[in-house]
Length: 143
Image (cartoon, rainbow, N blue to C red):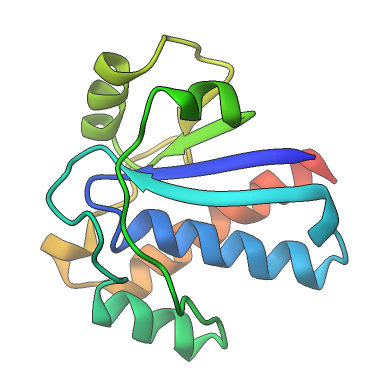
C-alpha cells in the first residue's frame, strides 16, 4: 500500500484538491487498492470545515466529488503513517519542519514551484492545472 498525504495551509482548497484528484487518477488507472490517500492542514483555522465552495465547484467541473471531506490538522503520527507527504508551498514546508521530523525523501513539494493558493488568487482553474500536473507525476512515479 502506497500512503500519500497532501498538505496545505487550511485543508480546504489545495490539499483536498490533491487528495481527490489523485484518488480519481488512481481509480481510473485501476490501482485504487494500491493507494491510501488523504490530506491535512498545517494550521488549525479550518478544522472541521468542508472543502471551500469554489474548490469544490472546480473539482465537480471535472467530475470529482469531495463529499464528506472535513479539514484536519497534521499530527505527528502522520509522519509514521504516510510514505510521502506533499506540501503545496514553502510556507507549508516551514510549518511541517516544526511539526514533523525532517525527511526530504518523505516530505517534499508537490511541484518544483509553489502551487498558488487560490484562497488569495481566486484562480481555481490554475490551481487545478498545477495539482493535476503534480498528481500525474505521483502516479507515474508509483505505477
